[in-house]
Length: 94
Image (cartoon, rainbow, N blue to C red; front, side, top):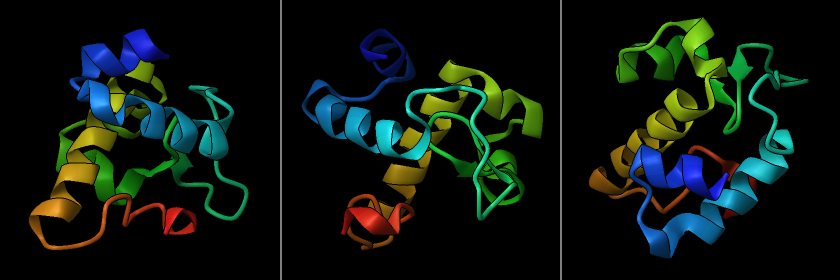
């Protein structure tokens, strides 16, 4: 997972936090689907209909660990750029 996060561009200082979020969301399973949100997919349980298009990937690509981790970083930065708290898309974190 650390290697995937590094390839996806996650800064080293956020790696431990990102690992915790992905563990809670999917137990690091790239094929995870949300229980309450069947459209929430992959390592970071990204909502396919919202974040897939934003990241320029289709639904199936969110099952790819690198694509999911890269998109999750984009989502994380999206929130920060709009003045939201870190991990805003993952409500249990705040």
